[in-house]
Image 1 (cartoon, rainbow, N blue to C red):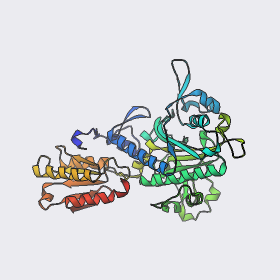
Image 2 (cartoon, rainbow, N blue to C red):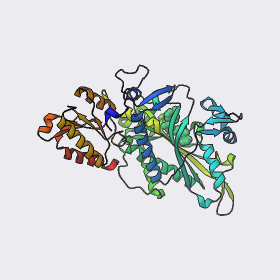
Image 3 (cartoon, rainbow, N blue to C red):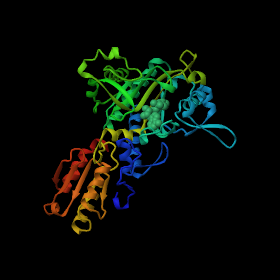
Image 4 (spheres, rainbow, N blue to C red):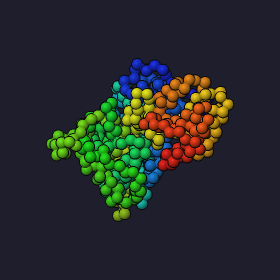
Length: 446
Ligand code: P5A
């Protein structure tokens, strides 16, 4: 993409309404525009990041054996009357009446609808296990939408639902979700810690929230610092291997890590003092096991191998896809702007032309652009007639992890400059070496 032809409405001023860095930076970098309280348009740069995150979520869900589909945003109220949640959900639910006077709602989550789909089509234990998911907009009429996309009213969520014959199978599904979520966040350059939590309106006793540690997080968390050393890395995982998956969950759930809702001072006191930490955290996902809470009242049953009709065991599992955009920025920025992890960056590399209009410099930028694109990378070429300082400031603000600077002085000796946004370190390299280096850096991310 050439910046001269793109739509990147960056703001010079810091917007007064934004209280936290990610909200400020998303507005300044031209990623979002507020349309109403807690409701945003995703401008091209923001949309690109959102799609990159969505893509990673899809890949990791499919890897875990979960099946993608799509349910609508609007739902009939009657489904929620069956589960008893139509009244329970309260004012967070946006209720709508259609022209025929039918009660509808904008879905805050989809447990009822997926249970309705299941009961219409599945009758035998032979069709289990089954996990279906979608990535769809949700609406919760939050009393205090704030912090931009972090606590929106309309937000993008991945929500998955498992159907299993019994508790043991359902717990394997729970564990599978925990491990696939750990992989998902790691690919985004984030550390999200699973913490024992409270289940709220979704229900059930078994639930973990995934928290990214950040001063601006809305949750108070308590943890053993040993947990922050854990990494999945690129270990191969067989999601059908119950013991292996349970083993990974055990590794991550053994060190103390709880939100304030489940925090227990007496248990926490057993952690060696030097490792006892408390901080703020951003909840970027939550998994639940709730057994037959929906399947029983809604009649989602299967015949087991003895011919008995049994209600299926279920859980639901969510990732805050749009919230993640803000959470990643909270975890990765400096005073000049965003610093995207390679896994989610909207463009892989920025090209800065220091002498726009100079035939040789322009030609060098064009051939770099072609070579990067041919290598499968997506460059953003700042080809505007702007001062070098302004071009650097824009690149720093929008946070591409790598920048190639092209100027007449370097070209005299056949080099361009490759700069890391994170460290600020630069190297002078022949253009083809810079391309090869970037190809290597992004090898695991393309
Ligand atoms: C699990 C999937 C559920 O709704 N039902 C389907 C379960 N869980 S949850 O914890 O309530 O939400 C899942 C994740 O969605 C994000 N989230 C939000 N993001 C932005 N703005 C909001 N107002 C908002 N509310 C929830 C969180 O990341 C949460 O973990």
